[in-house]
Length: 322
Ligand SMILES: NC(=O)C1=CN([C@@H]2O[C@H](COP(=O)(O)OP(=O)(O)OC[C@H]3O[C@@H](n4cnc5c(N)ncnc54)[C@H](OP(=O)(O)O)[C@@H]3O)[C@@H](O)[C@H]2O)C=CC1
Ligand SMILES: CC(C)(CO)C(=O)C(=O)O
Image 1 (cartoon, rainbow, N blue to C red):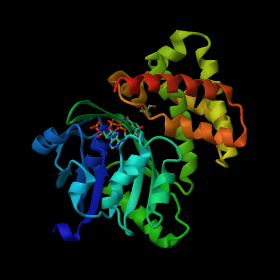
Image 2: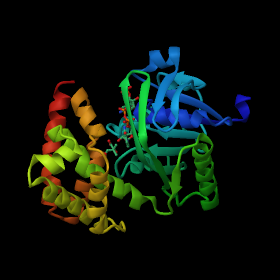
Image 3: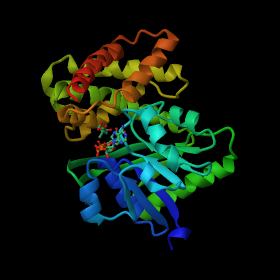
C-alpha cells in the first residue's frame, strides 16, 4: 500500500536522475515520483530505459511522473535533487510545494556550497549531501546509459537546530535505498572533504574538456607540454581555497587525482556535453563558489581565476544563443 511506503521525489530525470530512479525503484518500500522535463512524454508513455554496464537493461516505471512540483500536490519524505545546479534559487522556489518540516533533502550534484540556499529556504529540513562518482549519459530522451563507474558518497550537512540522532536515522534510511537497490555507497562523517575533492577534480576536467573539446588523455598526453603542469597548478589553486575554507585536503591530492584520470580511459565531462548541446554550464557551483571564497580571503589563485574567466566567456556565449 502506497500509504505505508516512504515517499521519494526525484527532481530532474536526466542521466544521473535516470540511474538513481532505477536504484530507488528497486526498493519495494519506496513510492517513487519524478519530475521530468524534456523527456516527460516519452517516460510517461514507455518508462525510462536504463542500459547499465553493471546492471544490464531495465525499464524503470516510477509510480508518478510529474511535469512540475506543483502537479504533485503533496509533500515527500525525501526530495532528491539531481537537476543541474545552474539556477539554484529557482530550483529552491520550485521545490517549495513538495517540502514540509519532515522532508529530508538530498543534494546529489557536483559543486560546493550547493546546500546553502536550501538551508536558508528550509531551515527545519535535514540535508544529505551526496557526491556522485557515477558515469551516465542520456543519448536520447528516455534512454540512460551507465558506465561501470558507480559509487555514491553520502553524509549529513548537519542542522544544528535538529536532533542529531534523528538526522542520522534519516541518513541511514537513505543509505538503505542504495543497499536494497544494489548500488555501492560510502558514508562520511565530514562529507565536505569528499565534496571538495570531487570539485577539485571537476574544476580541472570540466572546464578543460568544455573549453578544448578534448578528452582527458588527448589533453594530457597529446595537446602540449603545458597541459599537465597547468592542470596541476589549477588543482593546487583549488586546494589552497579549500584549505582556507577549513577543509582537510592537501597537495598530495593532485597526484592522486591525476593518477586516477591517467588510469581511466580518456573521458569528457557533463560540462563539455552541456557546451556541445548549447546548454548553460554548471559553472557557479564548480568554479564560481570557490572563486567567491578566494575573493573573501583576498587570495590571488591566478590559474583558477583565468580558467573561471575563460569558462564564464564560454557560458556567456551559450546563454546568448538560448
Ligand atoms: N552525468 C554524469 O556522469 C555525472 C553528473 N554529475 C552531476 O549530477 C547532476 C545531474 O547531472 P546529469 O544527470 O548529468 O544532468 P542531465 O542534464 O542529464 O539531467 C539534468 C536533469 O535536470 C533537469 N534540469 C536541468 N536544469 C534544471 C534546472 N535548472 N531546474 C530544474 N531541472 C533542471 C533536466 O531537464 P531537461 O530534461 O529539460 O534537460 C534533466 O532532467 C549534476 O550536478 C552533474 O554535475 C555528477 C557525476 C557524473
Ligand atoms: C563524469 C565526471 C566524473 C567527469 O569529470 C563528472 O563528474 C562530470 O562529468 O561532471
